[in-house]
Image (cartoon, rainbow, N blue to C red; front, side, top):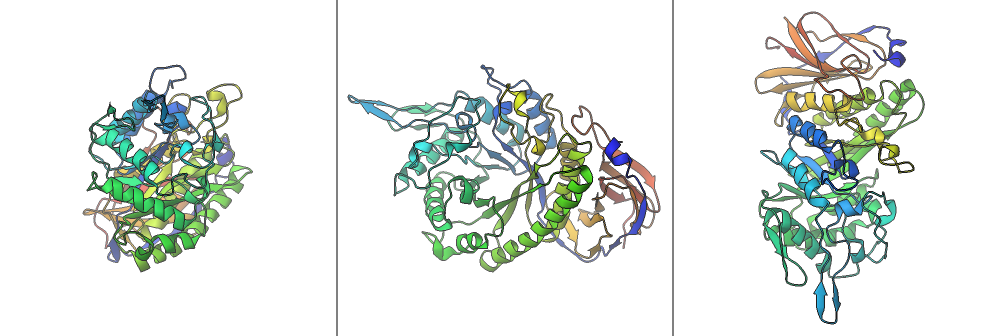
Amino acid sequence: MNIAIAALCTTFSSEASIKWNEGVETKSTPTYQTSINPLYRIDGLEGSSNISSKVYENMKLLQADYVRHVPWFPYPRLAVAELFEPTNVSGVCKTYWNFTVMDPLITSLFNSTLVDHPIVMGFATSPEWMWQSGVPVPPVNQRDVPYEQGKTLRDPTFKEITSYYVRLAKYYTKGGFVDECGNFIKGYNYPDFQWWEVFNEIEAEHSLSVAYYDTIYDTIVAALREFLPTTKFLGLAMGSHNQFEYYTYHLNNSNHNPKTTPLDGISYHQYVGASGNLSSMAKSYFSQMDTFVAEATKIEAIKHSYQSSTETFINEIGCASGSYMEDGFYSLCAATYAYLFAKGSVLKIEHFGMSQVIGFTGRTLCDGCSDEWPSTSMVDWYSGEGNARYWALKILIEQFPTGSKVAHNTTSPEGVAVQAFTVGQQQKILLVNTMLTSTDINLNIVGSYHSVFVSPKTGNQFSCAANCTGNRNNLSGSYTLDPLEIAVVIPDHAQQ
């Protein structure tokens, strides 16, 4: 057990109440996101990653639905396929489409997640030359946060940026495209993406108003639908909080042209952050999650007042700041994700995306390189093996497939989140200990039961090459949760 947690390992007792006959079916799906950075590179060129093969292998083992792939602006050479605008000098037309570094990375992501599973594709970063900014392009592995600076597209008709996304989608799904000079660029024939997300954190990355965003959204969606007829479209990807006017405007059909523009899904994000020791971080993290659940409740009310069939993707969930080298940190961050999954399932929110697969410290790349959100990582950035977050997500994916029935009348004791589900004919109880103390909880289960769990006791929280989940069998009476344990308890006989 972690030293920081062992000192607080006092045991408390509590009781949970579950009414199994009162519930509703939910589409709540645990999943994750990738946001592109150099450690995903698998091209074999200078600067390529030495852990990417292991990472893709571990991603495939998760067997997740609705994985969100986001080629992202801090590394534009990994995310943007046309970094420079076409030229025509003395009648010679030339384009600068370049998939050399992107292709091995993007296709490896697809091969790890697209086979037999729906994905969410979001080429979030568009060429900056299409915006009124003039920002230069950095070297391939250099992190460049200022890349997205333009607030207004230089083409007021939006045809230029729409053509970029049409060509990009055709490159990966229709075998290739004809570039601006009339040359055919051969691509791939991957299945049509089940979901396409238009941009990311629109209020921040280009500081877009919702009205301006929706005009771009409508134009891109209309063009993509012409050759991706089964693809659904996801909008907003909000990073900021309590900006309810964005949802109210976007979800109102009368604000779109045409009014029949599909509003299949909306997305928004939630990161917790705090400093201090593990105990103070834990109190702050779970309090922040409670505040966010209240916000999500309001967003869902807005959604249902306009578009009851629109799906919700909370597709970035993570710990944006904190003492990630503190013993128990990744177990804590895993517990905050499971806590939100339990609370959000009751709201019938459809998708919960853990963020992100690879974060890392800057020195992993070079002396003086910038950190890439190490607190959010699901894997060890030196080995590619899963940490406590990875293994917790694996449990949730395996135990709670889409279509599970959630029991509404589940009463949780203080310090423990309890949520009951029925999966097919099997009853399951998700437990999340938010405390740095162990606790005995009486689940009032008649007969024997067993469990699968992740806690600081089940393996190295930073890197685990084997199965880092635990199992308890032939249990009866109360259940003892370790500090920060995430457990799925399964009765051996049907409960009433």
